[in-house]
Amino acid sequence: MPEFIPPAKPIIGAEERAAVDRVMQTGMIAQGPEVAKFEEEFAAALVDGRESVAVNSGTSGLHLGLLAAGIGPGDEVIVPAFTFAATGNSVALTGATPVFVDIELDTYCVDPAAVEAAITPRTKAIMPVHLYGHAANMTAIQAIADKHGLMVFEDAAQAHAATWQGQPVGTFGTFAMFSLYPTKNMTSGEGGMVSVADSEVARRLRLLRNQGMEVQYQNELVGFNNRMTDIHAAIGRVQLTKVAGWTKQRQENAAVLTAGLQGVTTPVVVEGCAHVYHQYTVRLPEALAPKRAELLARLKDEFGVGTGVYYPVPTNELPSFNVAVDLPNTKLAAASVFSLPVHPSLTASDLDRIIAAVNTVVEEA
Ligand SMILES: *Cc1c(COP(=O)(O)O)cnc(C)c1O
View 1: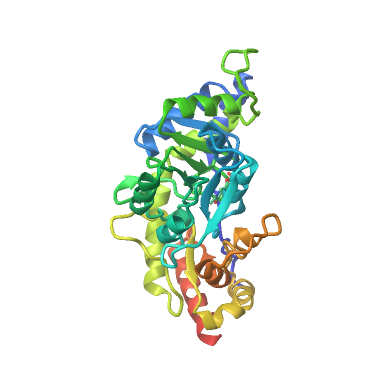
View 2: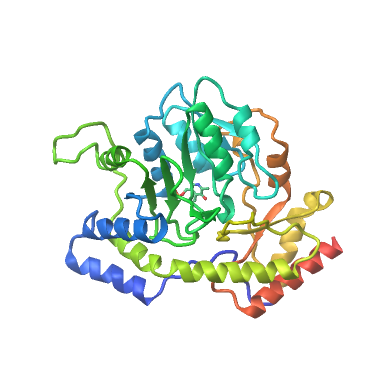
């Protein structure tokens, strides 16, 4: 049995451990100077200097971003159905209604035509997801938002350093959220970073993450404790210095996979965009979709190739939402996609093994 190639592999090195130790030795481990530095460095490195606010998870980032932008009961926010549950959850947690729409089958990102068709008098915002590390069509989404007077929020959880027509994700909407969960393209352990267009929204975000308080015991609004710790920020600061190199490695790995794979639909990169391959996701031909579980079991058991399915159930079909709406591309993608290892730790021989294994099991299916 060949050595197992995991579908994801967070890289935690000596520098991250030393950074944690450095903070521990100060005895001040909650939100403090490390978080402030991480926010500034993240802003400079990834979002053209846009003000950035660190929180304790990506989900908190979406939730507080929505609240800071004024989203609440009675409002509708248009989201793709094909994404991680946190996208829709964060909208629902504000008391607003997530309106689930279909995706485009090439990029797996929200379909602008479906967005426009879903607009009602209650629609306040559109929240595209830059799924797998490829940007949603921000030109079309911004045009629709401008035409209808809507805000745009970006779920950039999976897309650190991705670009749409040369412009970094996280610089388009009222706010954008980047997740720092261990399997994402960079991590702080747990964490999220919110880049914000407007200083008043940023101020409300900072209040909401800290009990509504800027001046101690003069709470201005009802808030949460969603602060990032200095320990987590110290890890994130180290990772931030490495994410560009890791991204390049992911892109090189993806190019090797795309050149070698047969019998599956490989990822599309829209002209002028940079895909950062949080996931390298392929699609089986429709006739083979019912055999997906069997094929992935073969990849794991016979070839030692780990895979993942992101996401097998559209958010609207989850028991937590259970909204009946006909979304054919979402349904097809949910039934037929799977993701292969693309992480920066892969060797050339790992990539060869992955390609040979996939080509074999698909051909024999
Ligand atoms: C990971 C992820 C989130 C949530 O981020 P956490 O840091 O895990 O809370 C939200 N949306 C998408 C698309 C994600 O992949």
